[in-house]
Length: 319
Image (cartoon, rainbow, N blue to C red; front, side):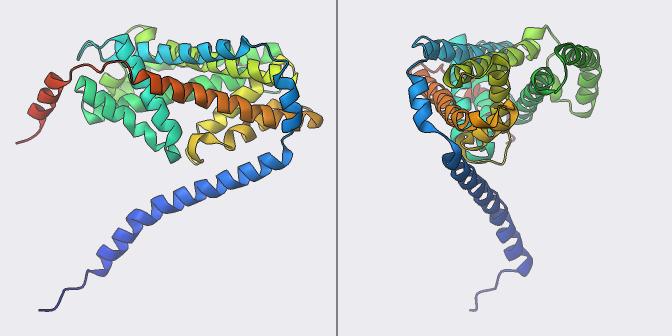
């Protein structure tokens, strides 16, 4: 009996399903290699080693505490958002936030974002669509906050001009928030669970703004201490690194793209470029160490019993 050959359409479809992801990963690796090649050619690690010895020892734990405070704000937001489904302690929510953040760092092309959907579904029994809508809501808020910070720090205008544009942008955001939310709820009913219409803490804006502000201040302060640049340049460099780090097409942990973003945004004198690139690498490595170390320690927090959540999930499945 002859084996039937697979239809050409099926073979082409199967090839298409794996060629796309492989091409994206390969492109990310090429970009990572190019970024590192450029970085290692231009960074001055000798001068950086001398400058590291001048940085006060307390600056490193202070910066680490600021980063962890930002994660704690996200944990509080996570707890507030889903408490109507099940009460979960703040320590457990911090464990989930740090675990999700570690997955985003370690997995390429930000594929670790899917960990948020699974964790929310697992711990609160939320539907997958509601969890995905919540993740989208988080990232839209993050994008809005980063744009506002870019208006404040990166526009080549006077301080008064930047503050005026920032005030107009915040006013527009406040005025349009409820109409846009109502529109999204009509078009996508699961958005109601992702963006509850309550106070600002639960709606997530305060958590997102606090997280990114603390991170830019912490990383910018370290860059200033390591390079001797002025405070505005340091904050611009830190924001540029974060803006580059949230792009989907990059290597694991944003290595290379973070340093390039910091260099582009800082607008520093050319003679400072080697020190800036080396400092951005050190600061980025410090941020990754804090994030991954905190995620590892967070696994010591006892996980809550999920038996009744699993039962609810099983009951919701079609028979």
